[in-house]
Length: 402
Image: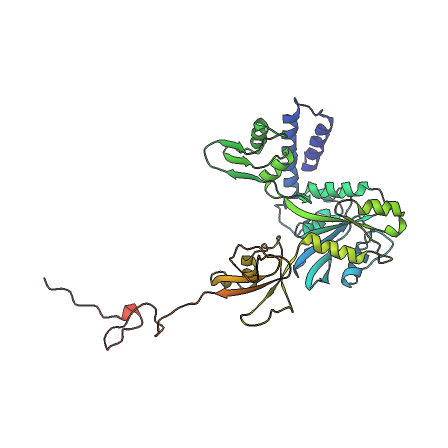
């Protein structure tokens, strides 16, 4: 029996099992088995030979946004409008067969936009080259799920289910749980909050399913069984997602108003170029890019080209700014002067852990390296004769007479 058949059998067993107190432990074990099989399904084949070519392209700019959706919903038209890159668009499905990159220039930053081929139901199992498409989504900082406003709203749930099947979690944050495997000592389970969705017996059964008999678990928040399985797997990707409803010109005002009031959703029209500025503003807000301007001592700030920071790429601290300028700047760092909304007064003297905000001005002060007058370090020269530069060249003293 193959992996797909095992997955279907487990899903069928979960569907016909009633949910109550007596079966919750059995359902938890089934969920753990299902997660293990889906992880095996995504693993690359061990056999030799040339596989299918992927869609991955080189990262460029300050962030990466990927367009994902069903065929013929307007992804290629949206790429052309936002970046100016020509992507073929036609009235038939699967017009785009490979990944087409473009660059959005917005607020003095460069955002890479990827137009991916349309996916279909069952993409997580490999249908329609869905695995290659979803693999590119894992490298994105933000997903734009393009939907047809005239089609059923169940399309959103279908795409979300396909992405969750391969380990992508949309608009969620990683669970605040400490988990560490150990060689000996048994299983240690502690919690600082009351657990309402699972108990210690459920945790032990899930760990036994993964054959983990020595570990330490500390729950810092109340989580579900699925979240705990994600922690054990350790390969989940938490990505922000913006739901873009195209073809709003074919909907009534009431439907457009309802779409606009949904969380993380925005209606647009590529054919009439409606609400494009609102889409760019929403992308900027969700990516949370931070622009920092540098300043030399005694000079005006350089507002020409900012250093763009983000939480997904190293963080927004002064240390991340130093590493982006040069790696050696962290060792030579003494303090920084900050002007902007993140400082309490102008200027504020800050350390490496200070978090910056958008459009802050930063002046970095380095340590002064002090050397001797002759440049030979701490070895002193006494007498008229200068000591040699190398220790190996020094004359050894005669042995003491006894």
